[in-house]
Image (cartoon, rainbow, N blue to C red; front, side, top):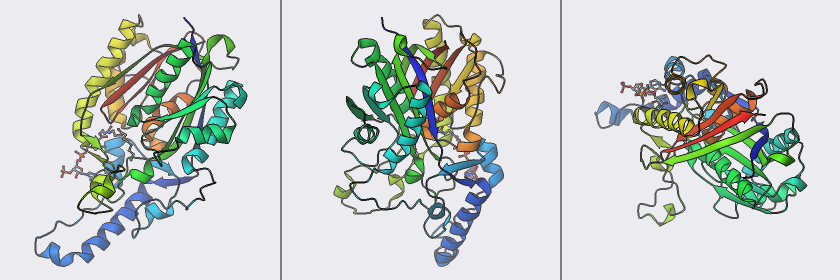
Amino acid sequence: MRQVVISGSGVFTPEAIITNAELVEAFNAYADKQNALHSKEIEAGEQEPIPHSNEEFIFKASGIERRHVMDKEGVLNPDIMHPQLRQREIEEPGIMTEMAIHAAKDALAKARKTAADVDAVICAASNHERAYPAIAIEIQDALGIDGFGFDMNVACSSATFGIQSAADMIRSGSANCILMVNPEICSGHLEWRDRDCHFIFGDVCTAVVLEEKSQASSDTQFEILATRCLTQFSNNIRNNNGFLRRSRPDGVADRRDMQFMQNGRQVFKQVVPIVSDMVVKHCSDEGVDPTKLDRMWLHQANKSMNDFIGRKVLGRVPEPSEQPNILQEYANTSSAGSIIAFSQNSDDLVAGSLGIICSFGAGYSVGNVIVKRL
Ligand code: CO8
């Protein structure tokens, strides 16, 4: 059977940074304004005041210290509380394509490939700025790639499911080289006015080049030994802002459920055992001893969650270098998180080292990719 390698990866990091301190200051100003506006209802006991957010809570509960975003001013303006992205002409590349081009060029350069070598583009992300034409086709056009492109969405697991799809196509011979990109504008669908979740997400784009092993020539190659995907329906992480919103009888344009909603504690409790069991079983089924993994590039949602999973899989407390976290810098970037961790923490591994790229999140969904450094 044809073998598949990841021969390059890239990350586009937006320049603007929001620290926890800045975020909390803006949220608390928003809360004070709203509470003043509704003081009569609050005094009459008809409405609860909006409680303040708190930096210590955010760091302790999640491990997040800051996040990168495409627009900082709108998010931090207590009268706006969401990113403001400029209106683009229809002929201009969309914002997801713009982000993807940076990450894709980085990944292609590392893979020592040009657009002419690529057969297909997969744009795998947790939200797409429009339904059609596919963002992947716009990226394909912007980079001058022949062949085909398509979008896919499995929320936080989009990238690992994208890797499995690409690897399967390369193994079967329908493509030799695939660019898989993950432009995540989480700031657009995060509810910045809800203290339970306003700290969770950031924006970024990642990209990986996958190709048939014999044609790869890059310095750093990881052979894909096996992939496994798992989904199990849950409403604990949900967003209802679909194309049917105009057809709803209430006619409300800005409702809470149109942004990211989650029951975080339930997600934590339910997802950790699903992921640990899946990774251990997948490795064992593939003849890989999970306790001998050299590196785990895990989904970046919550530091404690990763600590639990790392301990369960390795059977001991992982060294920080064995399970690199990037969420302190980027926050949760949905499907891009495990790929940022991989891209920024894999060059040092020696030939023969074994690792997993593992994602988990809404769906629920879990994706696991077992790789070996060549
Ligand atoms: N400041 C101060 N206090 C707070 C704050 C805050 N900002 N937020 C909550 N509190 C309070 C709560 O009100 C609660 O108070 P009380 O005890 O009086 O009720 C108390 O702190 C504890 O709250 P929680 O129980 O919610 O706190 P946790 O310790 O559970 O931490 C976390 C919350 C960090 C959210 C944690 O539960 C977690 O990380 N869970 C896992 C979540 C996860 O992995 N989700 C995956 C989502 S990502 C995904 O699937 C992709 C979706 C698509 C992308 C969407 C982009 C927008």
